[in-house]
Image (cartoon, rainbow, N blue to C red; front, side):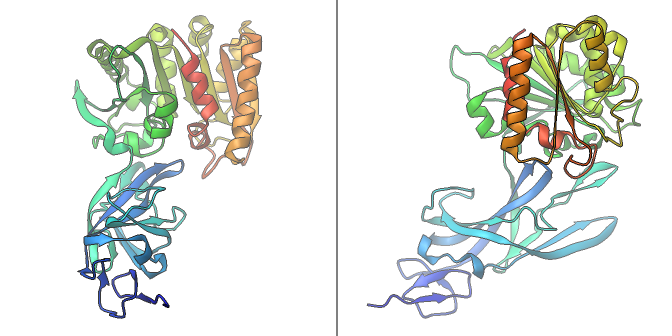
Length: 414
């Protein structure tokens, strides 16, 4: 018998069905799209919508789905500009019993559309001095329905809180009785300042890189991400002593109230303004932390050399950084040069930030081996000129996906 496959108007291909009006389940009952959920995630280059989960009023099977049949339209609106409208590219489509991505196809009430993250309209955020986010609810339309909800992968797994008027997000790993886990404290850059208690974990990967399921399998850890209010670069944000004091109080309170946190494994990472903030309080409070990853920032050379000679730091900076110059007074590079001049061994490394991930990790592994062999507590990585993705200041883009750098951090013990 010849099995006939007919493309139907509702976006499904159904075996042995000639009716072109609606899709049908295996039972022969017509099923209709009734809702949709936009699936967003924080990629290395920012917050993007990478999928759409279409909900049906019946069960859909794998043989009924043809990705080419789905026309996904998007309208991104903001108050100060005309809406951006267009279509999204569907990479693959498959049924599932829950509204999430899966490598395993299961019959269910959902059809999952994986969308091309390189589409011009994939971003869910834009820059307007600070990182701002489109309201994605109702922004996507397919099969006559618009999305009523947005699911933020990893980001939605954080809880929200406020401490001394300082908003923060907190991620808790799967905790086993009797075990203790590290805590990673993240200090965001100037662009993620605000009061939304969202930008500091969704603007880039400084936080979600540690909460991502693949990282949690390797290094289960708590993650604490406070948000600084908007302020003038150089005087506001983490440059403010009172905000740094609030962060330190929040860290201490978090450790004290969570017995599953190992106080010997509290780690710090900061990018740009967050790196400035880290360099500012580490000289006096480095005993609270076991190690740090600091990206494209600057601090006080004398204070760092005097107090951080034995404190583990892996710093990363693009040689052509146009926002925080590589060789500016107090830059990461200048501090590490001063540390070496003071007799503290420094492991130097350089590679292209646009190289394939496996190549970058090979370079990082070589740096880690050399640091271990020399007893160096300080590793410095330069991204070569013209090789930092997106723009010259974005050294964090290739840093946080690098498993070797993250592995090095979790090796440190206070």
